[in-house]
Image (tube, rainbow, N blue to C red; front, side, top):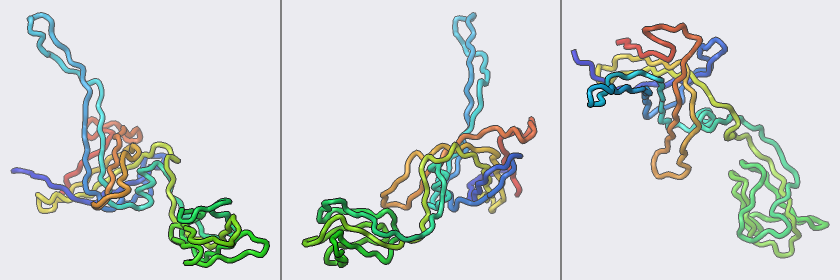
Length: 251
């Protein structure tokens, strides 16, 4: 009987506790591609008696495997994994008299507040009796990005001071965490066999940092994560199933 394959399914990633068991398991969302690649490094021996220098033996020197995921959902958790960062949610707050534009701001240049997601913005100058700047006359503001452009500052005294409230946002740093290891699980469907269930478990995957992130694109964005499959010493060595993972045909 032929057994053809065309897989879909949901991927799960989890951290590992001190006993190697998966914890904090979650799905990264839609994974467009998931590929496992195995590789061996071999030593080859060529005989030196026949005059043909024939290959007569091969010995495996090392075994390795890599995993590649094409992730389509730009959640803070996915980005943190890809960027070797930490996703945090900052609290909102208020700022009083933040200096903006320096001593001689240039009309038309763009200046940035210390925080995005701004509300209740008030700009004043530094005269003895401060003048409150008027939006649309003296400046324009993009409050989502916390950006200011001056239009006309005739008769006003620099530097200008900004007071405002700012909201809560999610932030992800870059290269703030060590190499991340994850347990990977695919709960798959073989659509070429009537959606037969297939389970794939990879016990220990060490992910590389993101190689490329398309920050401007005309297509649906996705990013590829690559990692190396590591032996899991918490699993007993099994000559049949080993310490790397398993594929289970459930049916």
